[in-house]
Length: 100
Image (cartoon, rainbow, N blue to C red; front, top):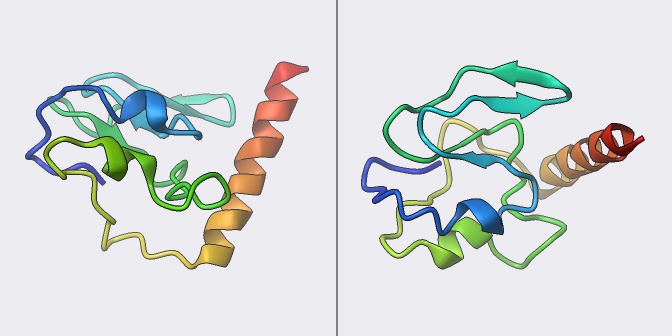
């Protein structure tokens, strides 16, 4: 999740391999559906799309590049490595289907 300390620098957004990070006020998409923004004034992470970079990198890239350390693990969405890998596979399958 991204905390209220976010300074809207946008450093995190391009680093996300799952496009799970969105600018505040912008709608998000998943499996071809569009949803209302989860935050209005700061960047936000869509929990359904975040894999904490498991299967891509050793650490979450948003947290690695955040200059104010506001990209943190969301206590409301605890997930095991296995769950995160399964989510990654679902997201990758959707990307493949979208390209066809």
